[in-house]
Image 1: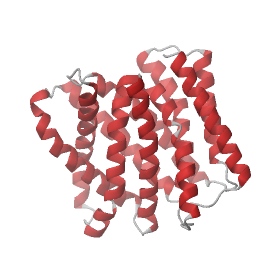
Image 2: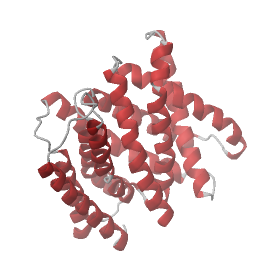
Image 3: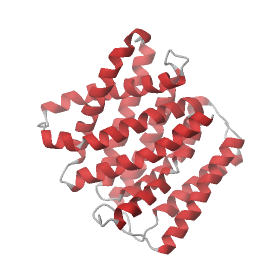
Image 4: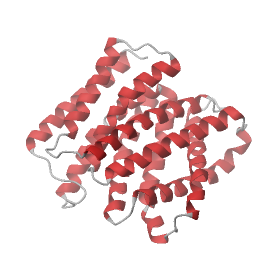
Length: 295
């Protein structure tokens, strides 16, 4: 369990960096479809290269291929909605609101794995949702389109978490680190292959491909630690711990705003900071509940 918790916390630290990198890509004139395509090609290329070294360990049966494809499709749909939303929503606010996927995730977990959820677990989920609302508050209103994109993104992220866990379960290895690595490169290798046909309709621009490298590197690193965590802790507990990324995003966003990059993040008032401190304590309480009363 300690390794799983550490991996989930590491994911919560790396993901906000990826969010900021994606925001920077859009501020430089990039489009959502471009970042989606370029990042998938970059991550897919790296994944397929790494996969060559592990081919003797894998048996590509229908179960492994279908679960890898399910991961790729759910992530693709979630990322398109995410890229749509982050064009108009600051990275720190969006990261905190993605914690709402817990609502979908709990119901999907009950549906697929028939796990019973106690009142204590519901309390932990509620604390994370309230924490997300508190962290998100900044006096700025979201448009209906942005809110819809976030909700749909949360749904597909929850589907992706379930698919990721199902993929990790069929990886033929007893080594937890190797399972996490193989699951991530299988998923993103499939995603890269799915993206290739788009090049017939989108002209490849070298400058934008290079501009997508920071986001791709950060996101791929976060996915390795995420797959490791979800294999050890399961999707719900992993997502509970990952809710701390809202606080990480807030702190990172405050640093970016303080450095004068107002186009990426706006400054927060002392009142907002006190609220975000309370939200952090709620997340710590939620993690404690799931640690003491595991599913």
